[in-house]
Image (cartoon, rainbow, N blue to C red):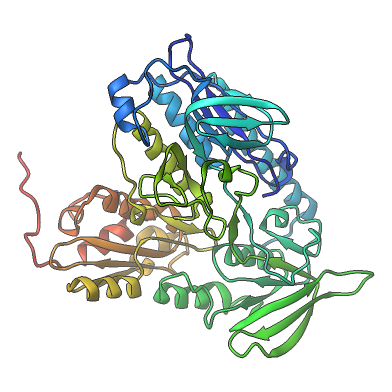
Length: 498
C-alpha cells in the first residue's frame, strides 16, 4: 500500500464540544502519493466529563483544556473509517474480455474508495490532506507545516505487501497483490510465492482466466494457516483438478523480472538446507508472502515508542505501550499496524472498541470471535481455533475436545445449485458446550461463518444454539445440522419462559 498516513477529524459544533480526528490510508490505483494524507472533521460524541476521564487511556483529561479535535485517527483504511463512523455515531471461466476485467477491478476499487469518503463527508467529517505523524503527546502534524491537537489519537495506518529480500518487484511481471488487480496481461504461466489467503485467492482468479499456476511455499505443506483437514480438502477441490503445481519447503531467494523478452527467473533454495534446488522460468510472479506494518515516519520516537518488527505494541484495549512497558496516555493503535489480527474487519472492530472506551465504556474485543474468509470457488471460512490449536489448549488446561462435521452433500440448496462439494467442522468442549472453532469449505462459506462467529462473541453454547430455527431450504441448514450433531454432557438447553 504505497500511500501516506491520512487523517480523519471530528469537530464540535460549538467551541466547548469534544472533537474527533482520524487518519487513514487508501490503496492501489486510487491511492494518494506517498507524502499525501487526508484528515476528516466531524461532530464529536457528547461525553460525560467523568466518564470520558475514566474511559480515556492514561490520566484524566483536563476538563477545561481545549483541543482542535477529540480524536485524531492516523490512517484511513477500513479500521480508521470504522472508528470514525462509530465516533460520529456516538455524537450523533467462459470467454472474457481481459481489458474489461482490469477496468472492472480498477473501477470497483475507485467506487469503494469514493463510497467510503462520501459516507464520512456526509456526516460532517473534515478531510485534511497531508502525511500524518505524531509530534508529541496529543499533537499531530500533517502536510509540510500543519499542526493539530487532539484529546486522543488512534493510529490506523495499516500495512503494505511484504517483499522478501532478493525479490525485485517491477509492478508488471513481478507483482504484489497491490498490482495484481490491474491485469495488464494474463500470463500463460504465473508463479505465486506463498499459499495463504492471498495466494490461494489469486490462483483461483488466474486459473479461471486460463493461466497455469505454480505455488512456491516455504513450509512443508500448502495453506499452512488453515485447519489441516480443511486444507487437505481445499487442495483436493481447489488445486488438484486445476492447472496448478507446487513446490513446498523452498524459498524463492531471487526473482528477476522479465526484460527484453526474457522470462521471469526464479531461483529456489531448500528451506532447511539452504542449498540451491532449481530455477524456474515463468511469464509472471505474484508475491503473496504476507503483509508488513506501515508505521515508518509516524514519529513514534517522539513519544518513546519502539516498534516490534515494525508493529506498534499495544495491550488488549489497543492502548499503545512505550519502551518502558507503560501505556502512552491518549494513544491507541488498531488494525494491521499492531499485528494482533491482520484483517480489515478486525481493524474496524478494534476501532469501534477504542471509541467505546473513549466514550466511557470499557470494552475488550475477543479476537477469537473474529471470522476470516478466503474468497475462492468454493469459499473457505473460519473462526476460532483450528483442531491442533484446540488440542494444545485442551492439553494445557486439562479438558477434552470433540469434533462434529457435516457435508454440503446433505444440503438441499447446495445440491440444487450443483455445489455439493463442501464440509463444515465444529470444534467444541463436550463438558461445557463452549464453541472453540468452526471451519467451513463450501458455497457461500464466507457468509455462513457469521452464525458461529456471533455465537462465540456472545458466549452462546452448543446446547443452546442447536435450538435455533433455520429456513428451509437454505445453506444455513449446514450450520443447523452441524450444531445438532454435537453432543454435550451438560444440561442440554436453558429453561425458557413461555
